[in-house]
Structures are given as C-alpha cells and as structure tokens.
Length: 90
Image 1 (cartoon, one colour):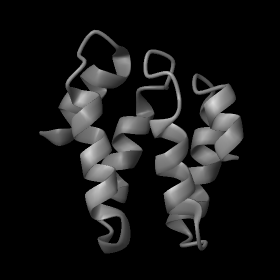
Image 2 (image 1 turned 30 degrees about the vertical axis):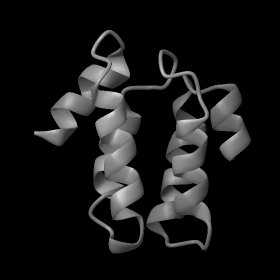
Image 3 (image 1 turned 120 degrees about the vertical axis):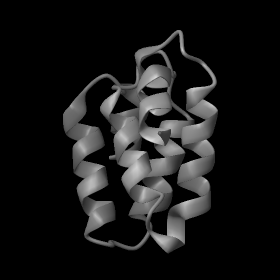
C-alpha cells in the first residue's frame, strides 16, 4: 500500500487503507504510512493526509515522526496539502 500511495498520492483509497491499518496498530503500518507520504510528490498528496498525520501524531509510537512531517508539509502553503497541514496544526 505504501508503494500505491507513492505512485498515486492523489487517490484517497490507498491513503485511507494504509491509515486504517495504522489505526489498527498493524506492525510496520505507521512507518510505512509516514515513509510513503515523505516519498510522494507533495503537490499531489491529498489534503486529508495532513489530518491523518495529525491523528497519528497523538499516538506515542509515531508522535515525533508524524508531527515532524506535518510541520514540514505546513511550510509550503502553495499546495493544498500545505494549507491543510497548517489547519491541522492549529
């Protein structure tokens, strides 16, 4: 699923599917989710990914990595993802 996100970051099913596995605490899913978003073209990632990262940042295991990536995304407000990240951080 991580590769699917990297190939098609503009399609919600892959993002939602991998995030669901992360919420179900499947081993490795959180790291795969963060890695896939980090490796995807930022101007193509669906804005909802920012809010999923915010949710993930409340979990102790992935808190630092998710919040770090969310902060990184928020620095570029020229993309829908960047604007969503700013809102998610409020």
